[in-house]
Amino acid sequence: MNDIVKLGTRRQKMEAKERAILQAARNELSQHGFEGAKMSAIARAAEVAEGTVYLYYRNKRELLDAVVSEFWQTLTTGARVVTGQHETTLDKLRALAEFHLKELVKDFDFVGFTVRTRETGTLDSPSLTPIRAYVAVFDEIFRQGQDRGTLVTASPLWVVRDLFYGTLEYASRTLHLHQERRHEEVVDHLIELIQRCYGADPSQAQVGALEAIEQRLQSIERQLTNQ
Image (cartoon, rainbow, N blue to C red; front, side, top):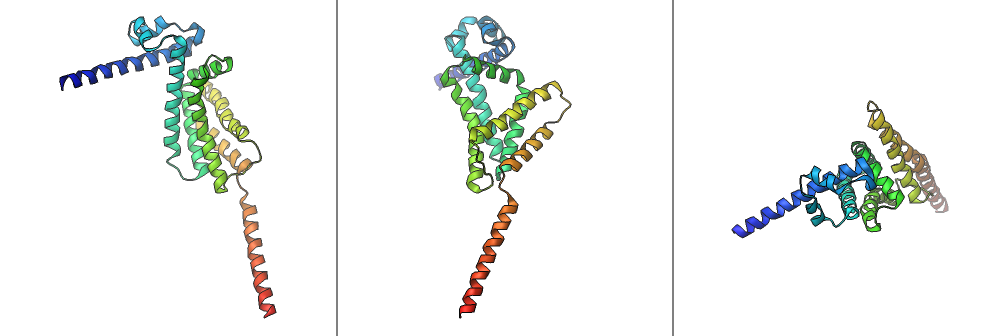
């Protein structure tokens, strides 16, 4: 029993050290970029020996991949939780937009760093998988809306996705600089835009229903006339 307790305690200590290293690395990378970040500075901030960092991660690139992966996996989990609390497609999209925008503003520097490293090709291809998984949350919701007849579009899905995330990313810069401005205004206008551009036209649906009723009545009238 004592051995099991000791093993569990040792594992907890190792996990705590790794969390401290990842948090320190995230701060260092956000402030100094990939080239400027120092493993020694990360070790000091995590309150561990520099050699300990190398026990967990062989080099700075591997540490970068781990930091980015953890960040986007956490975001994906959070996005699925908040969107899963709603039923309609537009409510799900609104919840995703609110969540995404708040996270962008809260972690503005690190998100900006992530974007820069993607653009420069610093990230290895496998480390982009968590980012794609996060983006896929929007894709699933939009496709669900299409299946339900709530949303329609002739545009490729990536165009709509870029409109959604691009609007929020640009707005996050404004909100970061002007903290008195409200997140809700951005989200309200974005959802209204999606509804107007890609929402199924309710007036057309009503016209179609009326036409179907009229055709049915005409069919009944013809049957009565022929009797």
